[in-house]
Length: 168
Image 1 (spheres, one colour):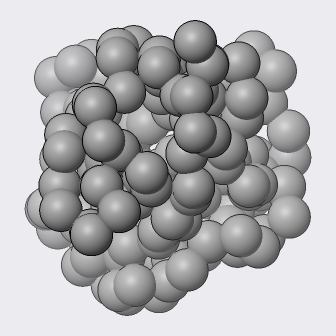
Image 2 (cartoon, rainbow, N blue to C red):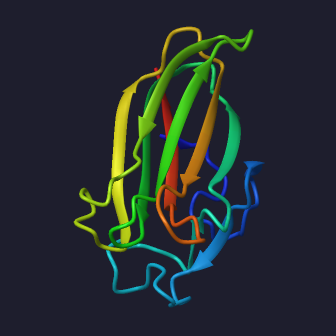
């Protein structure tokens, strides 16, 4: 499978991502202050950093990728999460487009509710696999982090974002 995402693990800051809305940030697992830490749920193979929503109600990052000509199967995964019992969350979508930019398909991961996280601060893996919609030439990968409750921080979190395709 060919990985199409650049810097899905936030280890290079926001490199590779276009900020579409808000003020997304890169946080470190050793930040403390209630942010996810090394002992909280998250990827076993985590680096030092992860994506956060910053201090705006909605922060959006995006990457557009060209699909290989013979792409037939895809897999998308991400570790998504939030803070304690707050409903802040992260949502990852992949929209498949044809050469004219017409949508051919959509896959969405998340957001996780506080209940799905059992009111724990942390990140939890979500995955999807499928067939690349016929006629697809590009894919738009969008990460949205949303503040849904109280507080001043947008506690939608994401890490280890991956979008791979396999040819025929």
